[in-house]
Image (cartoon, rainbow, N blue to C red):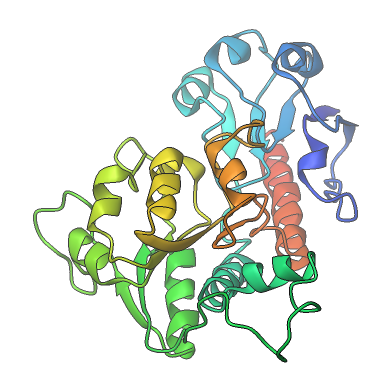
Amino acid sequence: MLKIVHLDSSSLPKHIPIPRPNIEHQWIAHEATDPEQTLERLQGADIAVTNKVVITKELMQQLPQLKLIAVTATGTNNVDLDAAKELGIMVKNVAGYSSVCVPEHVIGMIFALKHSLMGWYRDQLTDRWVENKQFCYFDYPLTDVRNSVLGVFGKGNLGTEVGRLASAVGMKVLYAEHKDATSCREGYTPFNDVLAQADFISLHCPLTPTTQNLINQESLALVKKGAFLINTGRGPLVDESALVEALKCGHLGGAAIDVMIKEPPEKGNVLMDAAKTMPNLLITPHIAWAADSAVEILVGKVRDNIEQFAATLK
């Protein structure tokens, strides 16, 4: 019988549980696991199921029975992949499950920023409209999405679908070449040219040593004045302090952020503090991926990954 330990079940919505694999097993679920609890909870486990719990080489070396880490996400930054390979531990993630909801979230953010929806909404919490003498008022920018230029950084599954949806609503789409590329591939536009031309910048590239802080003080200085930044990729793609400064000085027209460098963000985080007073800064709590349809695909593939692994043991 395989012992399966789910370390952070609360990282998935409770109304969509992971379907149990069709194998003989014991399933132990913990809503959350602190670093000092991980070793004890994985003692004797054949399979660890986790989204964000960090699995280090030191930890794996103390778990001789562990043979599979089933990641309930696409990103595997929380697992030391080299150590897992060295120790003969398989790591299986899930890709492609959010190919509908993340692009839809991005398009929603584009309209929210262009139409200043956060500003209009926040006004109603303080009776701004109720107290107005005319039938409407004009405190925030309200401009068209159509004919805007969208710069997409990362032309994978999500970036491509964002581009398709953007084209459908009349936007011009540019796919950015790598930052330090010496040549430009067909279908791409040089990195700096995209920064200079785009009305919107949407990040969909993986987090690597070369993409960390891809959007920083230097790159923001090259961005077209009044442009908008959207990040539904990885938090460390963006220097948060540099982003806030670009918003405060008016160089950026606004930003929509679904991911942060540290999640959940700490009290006093520069972006969270800025959002309290900036109606052009929209923050969602890393939920662009979490539509019910996407989660159902995700948990089904997690089960499949476990069953496929179990089949190799026979």
